[in-house]
Structures are given as C-alpha cells and as structure tokens.
Image (tube, rainbow, N blue to C red; front, side):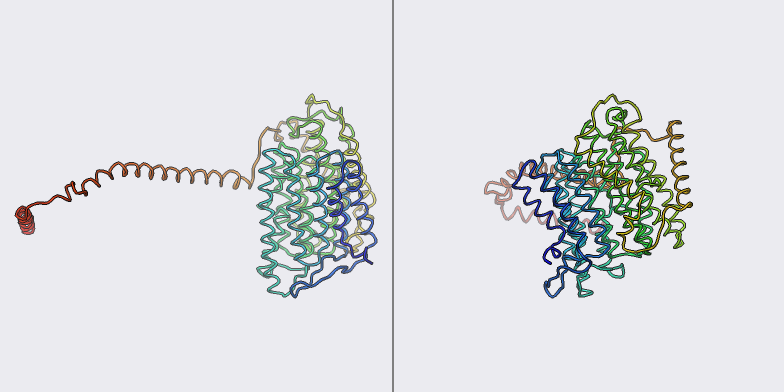
Length: 563
C-alpha cells in the first residue's frame, strides 16, 4: 500500500539527492533508473486519491490519479528517460541535477489534486529549468535565463493571487474545472497562458530555449508547455475563448519560423504552433477534441524531442546551428539525418507517423462542432508546419548546400535516444490503438479512413510543391545571419532604449544642477561679504540723508500717479 501512495515525483527527487554524492557510471545508472522504475510503478497505480491531508481548514490532495493525469505521467516518464539517455555523455552536475528535478517537478504538477500543490511544483518547474539555460555559460544564455526566470516567476505570482481569490470565493483549493466566470478564473487562466506561450506571452520560449545547452533544450521542450496544456485541460475544457487563442497560436509562428536562421529557434516557434492545436482541442471541449489535444501533447513530446535532439546533435558536433552555416551533413551524419527526417515526418502528420493519428482528431472535432474558419486556420497551420519543421529543418541542416563541414554522427548515447524516439513515432503512427487506450475517453475514432489519408496526403504534396517552386524561383526567404525579434522587441529594445534616454535626460538635469551650484558657490562669498560688518548692507548713514531719499521717492510717486 505504501508503494501505491508514493507520488511519482519522489523517485526523481531521490535520484537527484543520490546524484549529488555519486559520480561516473553509478550516477548515470541512478538517473536512468528513476524514470524506468517510476514508469513501472505508475503502471500498477489504480485511479483515485492516494494521498490527502488538511492544511488551514483546506483539504490538500498532493497525489491524485485519473486517466488525464496518467497519460501525461507516462509521457513525462518516457521523455525523462530519453532526455537523460541523450545527456549521459555530459559530466556537468548542474545540468544533470536540473534536468532530473525539472522532470520530477512536472510529474508533481500533473498528479496534484489541489491548487496549492500545483503552485509549489509550478515554481519548482521555473527554478529547476532556468539552470538548463544558464548551464551553457555564455553571456547570451545568462541574460536569456534572467528574462526567462522573470516571466516564469510572474506566472507563479499571478497563479498564487488567483488561487487565493479562488479559495476565498469557493472555500476550496481543489484542482478541478474553474472556468472564466470570476476574477480568480481569469487570473489563473493568465498564469496558465504564460507557461502555455499564448500570443504576446510567448517570447520567453523563443528567447530562452535556443540559448540552452544542446541537451537542456531537449528537457525544456518536453515539460513546461505540456504541464500548462494539462492544466488547461483540467480547469478550462470547453472555454470557447481558447479556440481562437489556439488558432492564433497555430498560425502566427509560421511567419517567424520561415524567416528564422537559428534552427533551434525555428523549432521553438514550431513548438508554439503545435501547442496551438492542443489549445484549440481543449477549447472545443468535446470528448473527441480533448482526446485529440491530449494525444497530440503526448506525440509532440516525442517527435519534438526527436527534432531538438537531432539539432542538438548537429550543434554538439559542429558548434553551429544557423541554417546559413550548415548543409551537406548527410554525407558524414547519415544516422542523424534519417532520424531527423522521421521527426520531420511525424510533426508534419504524414500517414503512418504519430502526428497523423492525433492532429486529425482536433481538426475533425472542429468540423463536427461547426468551426469551419478554425478548421481552415488549422489546415493552413498544418501546411505551414510542414514548410518550416518538416522541410526547412532537415533541408538546411543536411542537404541545402555543402558547407564543407565533415563531422561524424554524435556519441552512441545520443544516437540511441534519437532512435528510441523515432521508433515510438513510427509505432504510434502504425498502431495508434496503443496510444488511444490511454486517452481519457473512448470515442471509437479511426484516423485511417480514405478521407483523412487522401486529404492529408494532398496537403503535404502541394505544400512540398510550393516549397520547391519558391526555392527554385529564389522567392523562399533566405537564411540570413540575423536575430529576429517579434513581441520581445518591446522589452529587449523599446524599454531599454526608453530607459537609457530617460537616464540620459536625468543626467543632463543633474549636470545643470551641478553647474548652477558651482555658479552659486562662486557668488556666495560676494553676497556674504555685503551682509558682513564691512558690507554695504551693514554700513550706517545719517538720518538726514535717509529723509532726503524718502522725500525724493515720495515726490517721484506723486508725479507718476498724476501722469
């Protein structure tokens, strides 16, 4: 019984503690054992509340299990195992501890049954993940990490305020459906939206993720946004606002990803694009759409991780990640090339790959519920993701032109991690019933009917044709050595410039004050001398002279008054 009551985050935190006092192969074994043993333990845990306690007249539920939390729990265990395996060659204690604590915090959040427990792990997610950015130990990563931490802490503060309002309004801290019918609901939705990378709140992701270490980005891609997706599915299913927010998320990153040169930043925009599909599914709120959102989150963790791993391998071996600096790597990195193409096919929703069996559920639900325009936006987003993630990533990294770089495939542990992810992408695509058995609802959905297969194949074919035509005509945006800013221009350019100008003006005022003070200081001895015993204002005069002076002034006044 005690084993069932053991929350899933505990093995990860224990492994982190043991990793502090171990080194080498023993540490590697301990870290790999945490997700393996945790996943096996989770298979035996029945649904229900397994841990409960009282706190200030509130019931806290640190460990609740149902089908929604279980599927995210399995996904996070798989992601943690693959990411740890991928990072085994790293001998950096900071990265290793941050990664395993980060994964454990994500598990603590999805199995939390009350909002206070959720808040604790929400903040632990931010504090542990920022070290994966700082671990790159560069100036850019340091400042990106600072900006990332500020935004994540802001999300936590707003969440805490929302929780306090919610507890005051309802008398409960239960982590259940909340909705937007109150101020608390809006505050909590905003906090979730920050971590989910809603439009205008998304730049922490595209700013920080590409600055993390090659292995750290793999961890980052798996947990933060997916915890937010889980929180939305738990608290805001059927909230129509999310349909339009998600559709915007699915579409706008395409334009930035197409012009972006940094290939990991392209994947960061692609991550927002894919989360948009999930948010739309949650907003529609039907059994089919929730299944689609949850299953797509599961698949995205794997295929997006595979793409980040392939680009991390390129960065690790070449020291470069800009599309303008790469190309021709398929000659000496053939395994990485093939595995990257599997990830690209999966995110593009090719039939027989994992993205196809989940993305189609969300789009089918949109049509069934009468959201025709949303379906068209998602269709556009599907074509766009094929352009920037399905084609651009492998093409510019491995094929576009011969950069002259000759490096081998990455270390064996990195190849093995990518291979496991690729096998999962194909397995789920070929046999989706494995994934569907884990979903919250049984809808009897079948992705492989003629309509879905033909429509998706046509979409991919014409998208590929458009890419080839634009590229041949020289109309496709070239890979330029540049930094592209979108909304982060406000706080990375506008605000610093405004503050610099303000301080410059304040400095001018300060200099004027100093000049005036200097002038006054030169006059003060003269003034003081005139008021001294020897000065003009202290000298004595005869009374008669004073009377004459007053008489003259009075006469002058009378003359002026009669004029």
